[in-house]
Image (cartoon, rainbow, N blue to C red; front, side, top):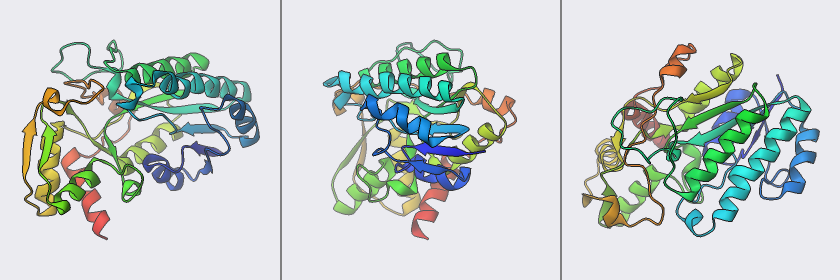
Length: 282
């Protein structure tokens, strides 16, 4: 099976390449913001499966530039899906828990629950999902949450774990929201599950996250506990943090469908975090 990964320079993309035995499709070759690059890239790729990790992920910035978010996450993805369908290639696309949040919730969301995004970013990702699933019944959309991976270390923007460790080293007060509950997910584990889903020919919509759930403050607490650090950490509310884009108060995703497909459950988020920090030291 010939596979290429678009967005291969990101945290998830770089973990997927060796897991899938895939080749990289670089942004210089296929830029979802530049529609003229998509058709030639898909045609020349000549793949059985194209895995799309490329996205506009600037959640807060999207509130002021929704046109760019939709150009990449919706219209660019629509074109990519159409071209893959024309080329007979399966498209595997990654989406987000941020397309939930409009309803009050205390139980994990299943794939059949109605979305209700609170932000321009979430709305753009939801539109992209619809385009991918409408283009071909073979396509697969994987919703996930709060990704962190080794290739975010020292990279542009890093990830939440690296941001927390950096702030602790700098001795700055750290204030983290404690009213947003989700499931941060290690990219290595997500890559493993993605490989199994592709190998088994899975299609449609599937949730894939680590096990358990936590608030971002609880996640930060565990980061520092495992790292042996004791910074000035305190919880705050989302209102106090004052981000431009609203986040869901609860966006835990159910992995029941993933399990029904025979895919081994991902590790609990605490175990995954411990593995990440151990690998980071190695």
